[in-house]
Structure formats: C-alpha cells, structure tokens
Amino acid sequence: MAKVVFNEEKCKGCYLCVAACPRKIVKVAEDRMNTKGFRPATVEEQDKCIGCAMCATTCPDCVIEVYK
Ligand code: SF4
Ligand code: SF4
Image (cartoon, rainbow, N blue to C red; front, side):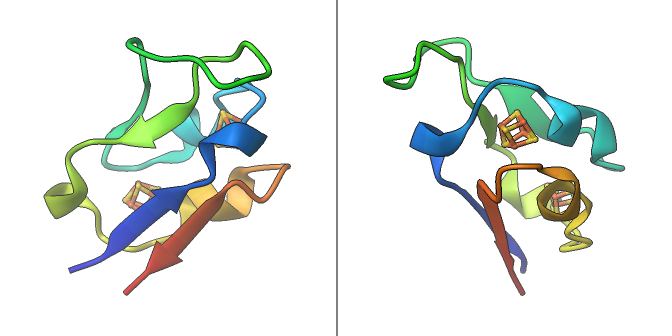
C-alpha cells in the first residue's frame, strides 16, 4: 500500500495537489492551520492511494512525499 506524507508546516494552501489527485483523496484539513495561517492539504483515506505521486509532482513547495 502507498503512503502519502505531508510536511504541513511548508504548505502554502495553493491546493494544486487537491486538483491533481486522480482518486480525489487529497483534501483541505478543515480542522487545523499551520503556523503560516494556511489550512494544509492532507490525505485521510490513505488506503485509496495508488501511489501515482501526481500530488507530490504537482506541489511547487515539495511538501509531499509518496512511499510505495
Ligand atoms: S500543492 Fe503543496 S503547497 Fe499547495 S496545497 Fe498542496 S501541499 Fe500545500
Ligand atoms: S499519490 Fe496519487 S493517488 Fe495518492 S494521494 Fe497522491 S495523487 Fe492521490
């Protein structure tokens, strides 16, 4: 199973990764903010991830790492 890890403190809330995910599992974390004041992108449904790394490739700030 693939695993997606976000360095939430680096996220600037552009949500390009949300649009890029073909499984539509990258979401905005509505329950928290990082110290920059942005709601970070996150994946709760890790079991649905196919490990394509589209999210990580799209992120301009290298926030996301995908492990297979
Ligand atoms: S693309 Fe990167 S910086 Fe933009 S919301 Fe996603 S994780 Fe955050
Ligand atoms: S690796 Fe692919 S399927 Fe998994 S969260 Fe990122 S874009 Fe979505």
